[in-house]
Amino acid sequence: MKRKNSVYCVVFMLFLFFFCTVDIHAESRISIDASHKYRGMNASFAKGYEPSIEKDTMLLVVPFVAEENMQKNQIRVGIDFEKQENGPFYYKNYQKQVKRQDHGVYLYQCKLKLKQERINGQYPLHLWAEGKPKQQEEVIRQEFTIYVEITDGISAASGKDVKDAAQDLSAENDFMEETAAPLPEDVIQTAGEEKISQPRLLTAQNSLQGKFLEAGSSQLWNFSIQNCSSRFSVQNVKISLLTDNRDLIFEKTAWYFEKVPAKGGMDLSQHVSIAKKAAAEIVPLQYQIEYEDGKGNSYSSTETVSLRISQPQQAELCGLTFPENVYASDTAIMAFQVQNTGLATIYNARVRLQGKGLFPRGELFLGNLEGGVSQPGELQVFAGTLDMDSEGNVIEGGGDKYGDTAGTVTFSYEDEQGQVIEQVMEIHTSIQEPEIVELKVEKEAPETNQWWITIVAGLVLTLVLVIIWLYLRLKYYQRMGQSNTS
Picture 1 (cartoon, rainbow, N blue to C red):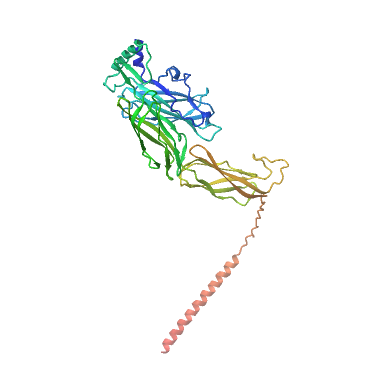
Picture 2: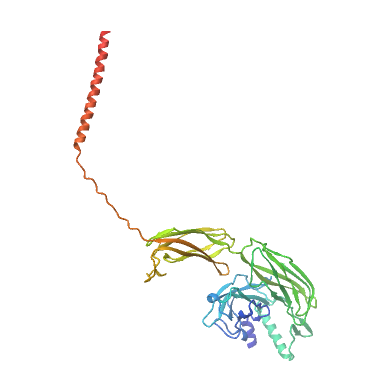
């Protein structure tokens, strides 16, 4: 009865495979802590951790540990899915930044949405974790494959519901207990026949994993897939490489192998070229695999990998201007322009100034600038004296107060990997003694009463008008006299 109850309650079983883990730095590995139980877990991985299920949602908790301290005390964790036709998951982005907790573990928690009509079977979840150690510049990345077994869904063969499947599984377990001899790997013993389980073909080598491919470059990609079965070979293997990205150019996208022995590998290495104007992004690729076992049973699977494209940053500080002479206690303006001449976005751009006797009003933060964008900026700089320290305090015996000085202008920004890039320039100026300006107030001339000028002007005007009137009268009488004479 106890065994049946456990069958109803247990919906998923996680099996951790480290076969697909790829070390970028052997001394800087990220691994799963399988020996401890953490919040949200009903047991450790070593004791059969099972995720909790509620309302078609699975809560997945995976504890990661790292042998080195990571920058910002965090790693990024995500899940890659094999997009199968009858897969139980809704494919979404489950990437998260995971902070290190006090006990040194990076506890990744996410809720995976499940389909209501899910089919019983085993399904892989490809987890990856990456981070940048404090003593290294290169990002390290580890991959882990976790197999999820669905037992509460619909039987793929007969369409039985979960109750029927549980009864069948219970009967099968009873039969297995009655057979004392252990079963060999990859073989399920049933009454009267030996059934070969599906051979698994998984990624064995990926030389570009965790690396950034710069746009405009060409890289050798060492990639291989291995037959994980230790007993059985596979045959008639066809592998197709699929992607929607047009900026990646491959030498080959299809392979055929007539037969692959147990534990045998298939080399899919080739050169991959990246277009010069390719966008900086993570490009998912799928290897679709079709193959047969020794009895002619056909299988198909998908291996999902990702290639990271980066664009080189090409940003600069230009048009830098500052007065050649400044007076102590005055505020001058340092003007400049930031140009992002590349195609990639630059992050957290900022400009700061340091110089003897020069005290900027903080640093100028410009934020993120997309490719092809330029932005002007100004920084207010207070001019002190040369005998001041960086805090603005006068140094006793610090030498001359005025004279030539230089300042260091630092333009910095971050690329997509968080690496800081800096450009350093210099400005030169001369701090001069403040000018003392005397304000001379001119005395106003006292106002005088000039009424007599007004009277004289009035008399002159009156005289002119009288003369004009007399002249006009004279002309009138002359015309009248001439008229009478005639």
